[in-house]
Image (cartoon, rainbow, N blue to C red):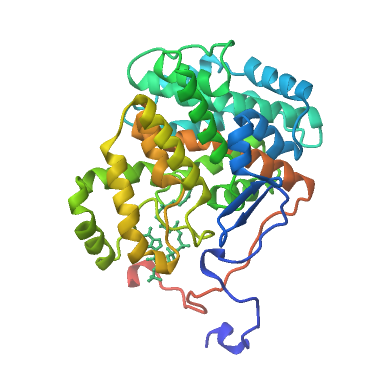
Length: 387
Ligand code: ACO
């Protein structure tokens, strides 16, 4: 008889698939009010940050908990600027990646490789923490831009010290100095994607951090988690979906068929929000600013029509556009290839991952949840020849 069948069932905490509603940490970094559609970083609304701040200032706020003084911000921006270059050995490694490989895989491998160069782990040394924060924020965009040029058969171009963070990234990607308005809107997109509490990639970052491994491994594990279509990968799929729908007159029939076949509508729904994601509200305004300046995109009309049609069909279930619904349209207008949308998300979210890494180290306990075993027990060994 199976040994386990003699053991009375033990009462434990209720199982929640996907850990929905289960608090896994205390955190002072970001707060989401999913009913009112409010998102704050360290107590400041994302709307205020998009209007008043820059991505690097927001990253500083997220990681160190307070807004920097003017001198602190200058010093931080300077440090990040000084570390933007990536070793020629990492660039050579990237040249050996298959050019048809996904840029998220290239980014994950490149981010992990930083650990080979800066592996002296000294997690109790504040200078080590600052150095890792600066390096990761500085080098991740350079690596994303480098792979883009490498896969086109070109040599990566060096960062420009006279350009701020967002403008420099667009320059490294397109080899052209960007229009200031395009750079400002891109910087706003980075702010909007910088942090979002305990989403899958941040949870992954915290689990990895809790083993006291190095921060490059923390970010690499989070990049791998972000790549999936239910998380960061959705913004790529939104454009594919809009292109598949094709025209405004097909929206309602397409949506009805998709709902009837239980297909997930990409860029809709969120575990935390039961109203329209506040980041989608801001991104939609940014998209409209871009279209006013650089010309309209007919896919935007289609997207709005889809949002309207979905409001009556999915709205009652609390399913509304999330951050990914309009971000792809913004990036497309900025001339960014679709498979770079998620790596750009990773550039921004590196700030949040690092904030959580630092917070995790401040009160660390290794993550080790339990499980409810549902497999077989007490089986008799069967020799190979008898199977
Ligand atoms: N389209 C249609 N129906 C949906 C959608 C959607 N996008 N999202 C949820 N639902 C429905 C489900 O079918 C389910 O219905 P049912 O109860 O009748 O079976 C119900 O809403 C609950 O859905 P879950 O998948 O259980 O909700 P969960 O909280 O686990 O999922 C998620 C959240 C993964 C984001 C989901 O909404 C989804 O897959 N969305 C599409 C992908 C996407 O846009 N991801 C980006 C998220 S934002 C980010 O990561 C940055």
